[in-house]
Length: 339
Image (cartoon, rainbow, N blue to C red; front, top):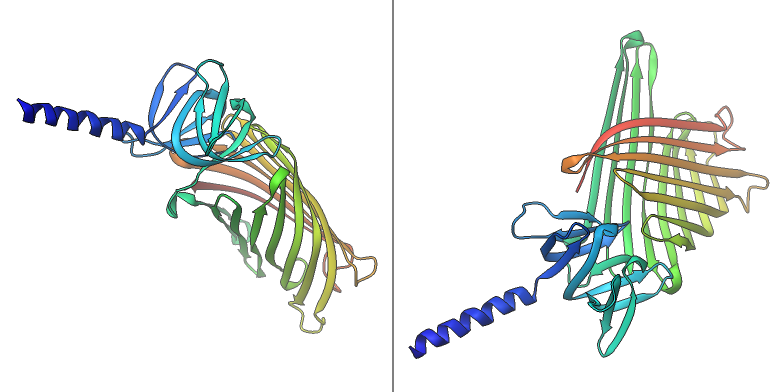
């Protein structure tokens, strides 16, 4: 009898321990999800459960209650950052209590714009996507192939992002043309929605006779607006621009530049999202020279993490290399997959 009693107590304690490490979400339709909360960003929260092969992705607006004893880095729309556990206040609808050691903070659940588990493993911090596009026309045997790839890594204080975009076109009686750009950027997140920015970018562009443009940037940025529907950020700083050309008779150019830009991301439009940016580069050493890069991407998400993307890129240089075009643009339609 005594052994049975001890076995019963052991089972009860084990069950309590299992439940203790689980997180709970209550959504607007009354459903309750139990599992492991991973992250919430751009108005989508991810949760891993034992009863599903794939993580659940839920609109943050649909979450009415949240309970977890894990440690999170939590950011609000005002730029405040907290490091602690989170649970809903059962006495006040729509409010959560964040506990940092002995200090408790109460705020509206709708004020939270970012939530990231502190003890996430390496793979769970990664994000990746790849998309391809292909077109072929009988006329002149015109063929175009596009590849777009992105890889990101997110921690509690910084982000690292890598990007690649390549387009190659061939047709009869015409030399092949290509346009390849990519880069790597590092952001360190500061209090009150500020961040520092360091990046390296490159561009190969036959239209502008660029064999290689290498751009090293250092600057800072600020989230003017950051909520569960969108973010709008500004950046400014300085860069070093090195250019080599496909025409060997054109000497290479080096110049020190400043840069200022804006980026907007709208992600609370159902399955649609929109990303757009504009950066202007006035030269310090090449008097009167101004360059600019404009980008707009429209993405539509399908089930199974598939998507279709429409993208438009425009480059401008008021002092291009001799014989090169001042402008270049690229319109792409690709189908891809998100990790």
